Length: 96
Image 1 (cartoon, helix red, strand yellow):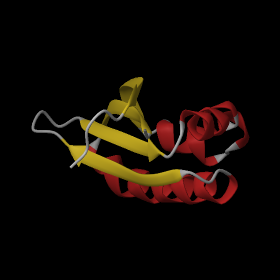
Image 2: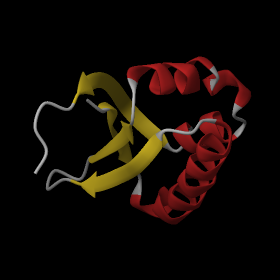
Image 3: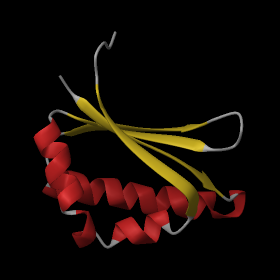
Image 4: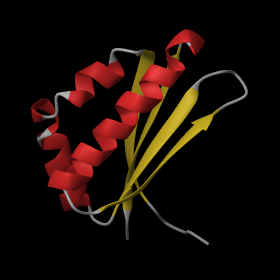
């Protein structure tokens, strides 16, 4: 089964365009060095916060990418534009 890492955070409206550009660069960097990232979904919720879910083929691939996170210069630059962030890992049980 595939696994996910889901983040929830806020981004100021004035920072959204820059956040999206930085996030795109971060995703490209992660994919370049860590195969198994199948797709990433960003959703703006009705309360103005965002959920950002990263889908991986295996827990091992996700774990390797998370362990390498300090080597991605885009990560702190991207997350600097967020506030009140939380993250959870999970396993996909049913997907249709």
